[in-house]
Length: 243
Image 1: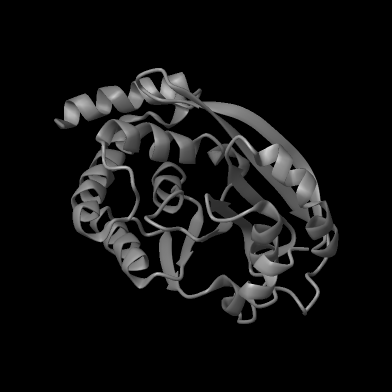
Image 2: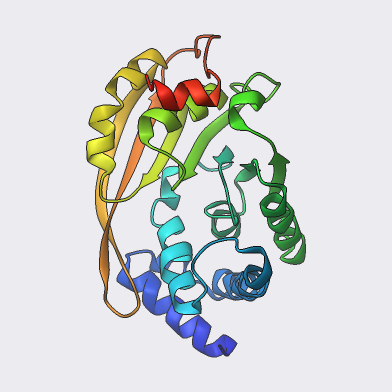
């Protein structure tokens, strides 16, 4: 896709989804560079199932930036299960004052994020390879203003993996699909055990460039007290018996 066409479609998509404030020439140009790197790398590394540039614009870039205003100015942010760099990389481009750490257990994915951040000159991105349930017992514990995760796991599982990294008073933000509200209800026990207070359950939609609409839900929690030291448990336990 020619860069001019990418820019046009990106601005159309952002307008459709109410985020035209992020459709500046500088941001769109950086996203165009990222799209090229992502599409080329995805041919061999299988970072995500999405390979069409139009879908990358809407289902990755726009989808990641719809909740971008949630994060406080200058916040340190951990993206758990960052995969191919979503939402880490789009957020780093659109919100350059954020200090973003991308965490994933798969080395090929964190290597891609590091490579892309370097190619794009993103100084606000660092990368960690490892498992959240193990790294939560290192110096990373309760060291981030915000922790986010997108398309990683059920909310009751995700909360146990993410909450230990959040500072007391900080935010845990789960980017979910149409079942977000249902998952929130199921995660009531986890939220209580992990000292997470529900701030909001923001239901909305994502519109593709061709007009197809899908449901989205952003769950926002505030951490009110330190996470008990027994959490997170081993992943097999978390999945077998969610809080």
